[in-house]
Image (cartoon, rainbow, N blue to C red; front, side, top):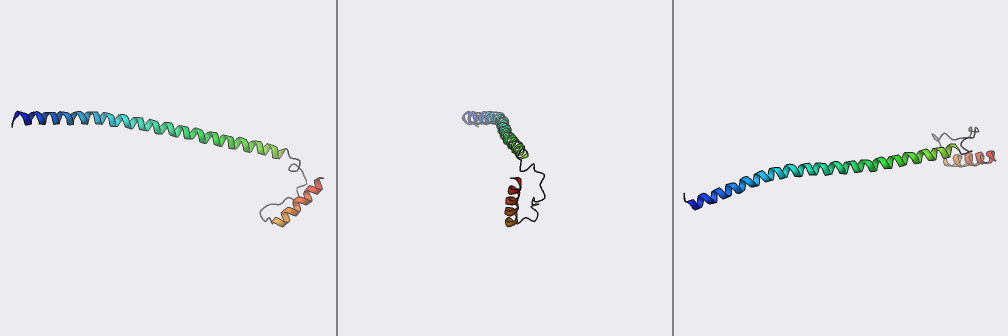
Length: 104
């Protein structure tokens, strides 16, 4: 084998070795970076979900407080309230109007 071919083989082997070493380090580094980015993305999404749920629950608490302070809801004249299990639209409207007149 001539020296020329030996040198070409040596350069090719060295280049292949260098590419494998650098490639393995780059692959692990890129994997770590990708996992970190995915983790941060999930954390941001969880913060947004937490914020949305907190706002929803606080809004419901505020609505319930407003309903509890309503005189119509706090009335003890509840015999005409519809159970909504067997509700009929016509009966519901009539009972609501009767209850409004009873509170006046």
